[in-house]
Image: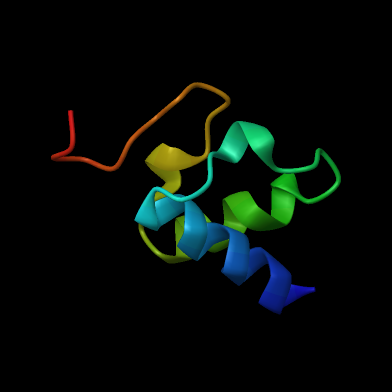
Length: 54
């Protein structure tokens, strides 16, 4: 499952996907993957965007 979490986290960081669209069953793992990448700020249900892209 770690590979799936990492895949979603990378898509969220690149802006292709939003955390709010991740299935509720996967959110905890995806949030952990984002935290490991140093991007836990993107693990929200809002339309958060990567820093510097406001």
